[in-house]
Image 1 (cartoon, helix red, strand yellow):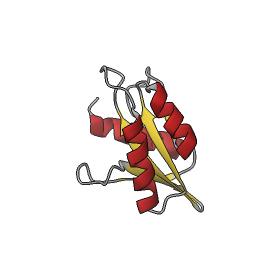
Image 2: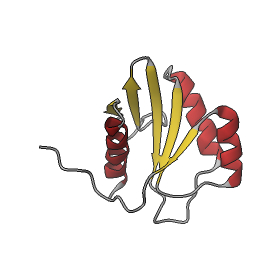
Image 3: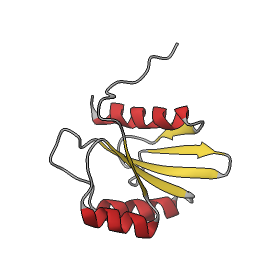
Image 4: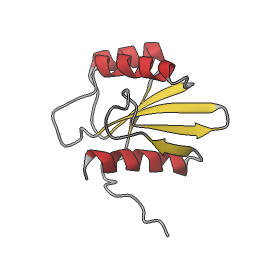
Length: 114
């Protein structure tokens, strides 16, 4: 799976929760990989496919997403990852009310649409 496919997988997760989703362009996206919208709720989503690497979610990523959330007038922000987070990232995420969504590491493909 490549990073774009992971972004699609994250959007599929939100669609299964009843949201309409929209992927942003792959580059020059202001730090937002997609949006999930349901009613008046608009979620800014940042996807980090780190499960197969040593990289971890850090506090700078959380703070940048918080700014992007406000820039796009979103009501909520989520970092979706198949990896892990550093302790300081969790502290900042809690303070700024940024959700970190840990996706099932076993799920590696999108369901086929018919």
